[in-house]
Amino acid sequence: MEQNDMYYKQKKLYHPDDGQPPIHIYGCGSIGSHVAVGLAKTGFKNITIYDYDVLEESNFPAQFYANSSVDASNDYAVGELKTNELYEMVFNMTGIEVKRENIKITEEFQPDLTQNS
Image (spheres, rainbow, N blue to C red):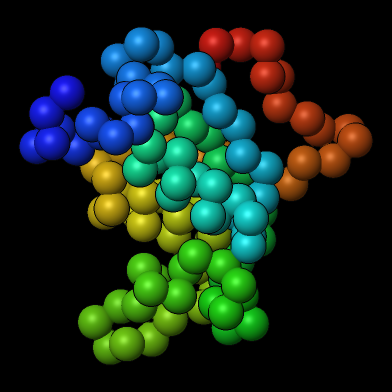
């Protein structure tokens, strides 16, 4: 493993070329936003994020959006879908395109996790 390889440290535990298990993250808030970025930076590529909520100013202190969701005018992306902002952030940081579902998980609606998506 060469140090010029982006994932040379992670390959001691997980090699991104050894398969890509499907990862489903419910909620793109204070935990989900950090988990999605961390997994993508580790080399996981088969990630689907689920959320229905939009960003609010009160989200920025605890969620990972504070450094990534600022536009050219330095305005936070208040009112934007969390899934769209997290997608952009992960892509800009890693080049990985996570899948996104703008849905609310309820007892009546739960995604089928048995598929190898």
